[in-house]
Amino acid sequence: LSKRLANKITSHQPSIRVIYGDLSQLPNKVRHFVEEHVKLCKPDTIHICDGSERENDLLLYVLQRDGMIKRVPKFENCWLSRTDPADVARVERLTYIATEIQRDTVPTPKHGAKCQLGNWMCTEDMDHELNMRFPNCMKGRTMFVIPFSMGPVGSPLSKIGVQLTDSAYVVVSMRIMTRIGDKVLEALGDNAFVKCVHSVGRPLPTTATLQNNWPCDPKMIMVAHLPERNEICSYGSGYGGNSLLGKKCLALRLGSILGHREGWLAEHMLILGVENTLTGEKRYIAAAFPSACGKTNMAMMKPTLPHIKVTCVGDDIAWMRFDSEGRLRAINPENGFFGVAPGTSSKTNFFAMQMIQHNTIFTNVAQTSDGGVFWEGLEDEIEPGVKITSWLGDDDWNKDSRQRKAAHPNSRFCTPATQCPILDPAWEDPSIFADARPFAMRPFFGYNFGEYLHHWLSFGKDAKNKLPKIFHVNWFRKDKNGKFLKNKNLENENIDMEALFNVPLDFWENEVNAIYKYFDEQVNEDLPKAIMQELKALEARVVSY
Ligand code: PEP
Ligand code: NA
Ligand code: MN
Image (cartoon, rainbow, N blue to C red; front, side, top):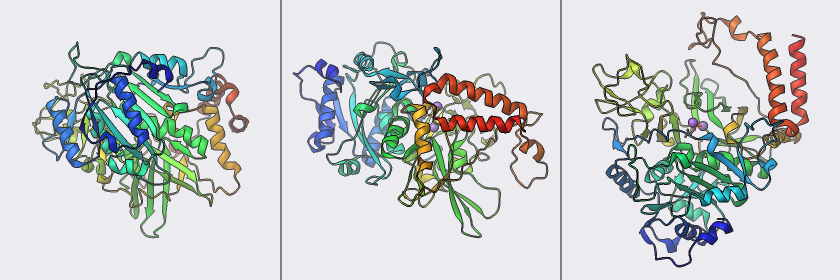
């Protein structure tokens, strides 16, 4: 909390009602953090999360009562939530990193170009923005206190945060996506933690009616990272990456800053194991792809090749560091999957389809009249005669008319990692080591992208480091008929190998020019010289090709 916000707090406060847990049992630093924000946000009551089954049942009951979730009766302990249609995804343009000095956070774009590598705000302006949002924002609501660990509780690589939130949906989701509760407080003791404050921004009583009983304030959304205070403040959205602050905000944005400081990497990558069951040889791969490109499907791949076994470690985030012998080790700091539902089917992700039939929270998917769920991609997997109600509640939704999507394109399933049938036995082991495909961090940089490139390059300068093999893939390439080149079965003779391995010269000429332009406009003075040399070498190869 800034001095400015602290000054806003009136000193005389009625005592606050704790309806779950015991404030006096909290470590001093946590208690102080809670008390300060109770005074600022003025919730009616406090609930200190212990992470128990009993607590989860209680919250699911409350969420049902408030019309925020309903049962998916076809499955076991599965729930459907529909959001306000104005609150359906991460909001990149309202996501900020606030520091004293701009260049710490983003490169300075050339001649007035808009920076595409993060949104910076100075700390003072950010305090002003926060001050317009957080005072009294939890009136009439319960403030939940969620102690959470990214990475296994007590593991040397793990980071602990405490999230305050006025959303029970966030609590039940954080319980799936992270490790929460008493065991985290025990591991924390009186050490420092990442301070996370989240509010849906709808103090009670509300004036306007809610959409789908989903409280939010889309016009006032702001997701703020304050690395110099070890704080994350998110306002106005209850959705995914905006509200489950352990994921994108802590594990990627603040994580990348910690990694830079402490000599490791926080990356937007899946991690999977590949084993040859004949030889017993096993490798791990960390792979970077932007959002909604199929990381979850790849992480749970069902190989068509015999003797090849794939195991899943994580589908979204990797924390990686070189150990004392110079081997690259990786962990998945998450505890669950927050996967994009559309496109998931028995064909594209056989194991996910099994995994989501228990203990899963679905958000913004469609429902079927036989008590199940539906989204684009499941057309061949619903019983004949079954009727579909779209995510917007349109119960005449007809797949033949296809005027509107049945499920929102960013609709999700939220499922505990341990339910993945091919979860790697060593998924919580910090000694997994990985080959890599780099860079899908653009929406998640916590600090200057030029500095991030320097940080990557620095690992190559340490002679003891055994650098991972790095691969580049593009399975979105299409043939001249617009069909994907990639084939289901690599032994299929119909593959157009020539097209698949073709290196189109005009493409690479354009690519080189586009990269020059991008580096010049976006990274400018902060581009490492070594990267420019690589680009020049690439250009020379293209010219002489
Ligand atoms: C989200 O949209 O809430 C989210 C978590 O983003 P991503 O698709 O990058 O996982
Ligand atoms: Na997204
Ligand atoms: Mn992601």
